[in-house]
Image (cartoon, rainbow, N blue to C red; front, side):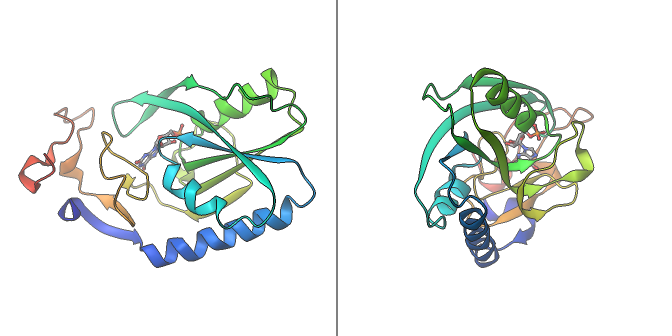
Length: 195
Ligand code: XMP
């Protein structure tokens, strides 16, 4: 698995330090608010677990299952599979995701929360912000790192549901994924022991 990674962008220790800072900032910025931290599954799960342990105030947590579809590395649309049925009215909801890329996912979730639930406010927190590929005008309230236009995996981020368990964030070797120009099988790195 590690041999499929071309470059480590954020090692474990750097992520730990930054997530601690994000938790502290959210604690300060959200002081006095009735906060629900909402994790978008599956990608944010590891980030979320670390983030909430660095928020030092009373919060509640909830989960939504959102999946984007495309060719594996490009999202074209968003499907909200499971959304919390908990009553979020009057709450400040902090939506937590792994990466803000085209912006479609976060925009769809924020829109749904604002239009269908009488929330007090909606904020957004992402570990990674890949501004270069944005198609929807959206900025997150809290960002861990700004990344260039690489397809990244690890620390919850996947390709074809793999690599989420890497403890760091890295750039996947191009030959490990298919693109529109070079269609292939998901998990193409069989020669590297992925399958
Ligand atoms: P956007 O902002 O494009 O993001 O709606 C949709 C979802 O796509 C995933 N995503 C990535 N996953 N490496 C990944 O492993 C990436 O570089 C990447 N870019 C986008 C992610 O789950 C995000 O929520």
